Image (cartoon, rainbow, N blue to C red; front, side, top):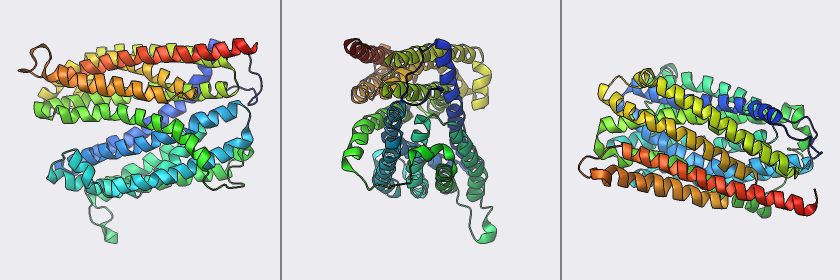
Length: 470
């Protein structure tokens, strides 16, 4: 982060200095995200070792749980640009009240979210989950419902901590939560707590553990907020204010489009699995292997994007538009370079990587046929992700939501369905590659549209600076 005090004039930005700032912020976020993702991978392995039915239940239940959580968490991400702008402007006295309203909003969102997870039958019926899987998936979702308030409160703290440039504690908390969850989920699933009268819970045990460690993460975050002297200038727990409609409304206007954008991106992949179910187990499994690989690769550009949002937001709050624009440019070049290197490495190592993911020859054939798409996809996707997060740093979120809808639901899902079942004679020989072709097209279009919008926003800010004579 910059050594200048918040709100003070910043030195002329250099590419080297901005690169160091981006990497300094991004690497702890990357580690925290990979640790969080390892919890989901662990649940898959633990449930799979217990039984096939439990594995299916956890796969469906966790997919629906993540969709609900990320929709609500996306809304709460409005705290990040809000606090970043205040931090950049040097308005430290306003950061505590803003975080308080974020906590109130988290509690408000927890009510409908807990109801959806606690009563999952309508969602399972809408997804047309078979009854034998729906029972286990419903039990898993009901278990996670108890932890949802803690998840949302912690993610508010997560957004705030990123905005004030202190991401390393998030990495430490993620390590504590993950290292607790894995043995706890295994014990609850396989019944290793039988000596206290607790039977084996099967896949539901993973959901119970997820809820428990959510509260553990929140406790760690609150303890750090209370004990660390670094947060005293913000007076977070002094003069606690009740919910204020104006401030919460501002967070919702900024956050609802962010939440739906996140939801659209996630569901554009989760829904593919439903649309290709008719192609057979090998096609679904092959797609899942490559989709998991894409999700893992995505962690790096997402970390860079979060760092970009924070630095752009701080610069915008300080009205240092030159630094904001320079940050966007450096982040785009840097992330594209990383994505290119990853794509080349993935292509060269495609066979051993796919071999680690499945022992079924038929699944490997499907997955290997899709690797080329992911090599291209992750490059364009990383670019549009950085651009979208940079726009959030400028507090531009409504139009990006519509662009996400057009690209990922319209071109990605709608175009993918056509390309899979109707294009190029595929009405007689459908293939899952159609969805990946459309996904690549969707990210190319998103990159162009978000690049255009970002160029317009930065140009407008440059015009304001010129008009003011700065």
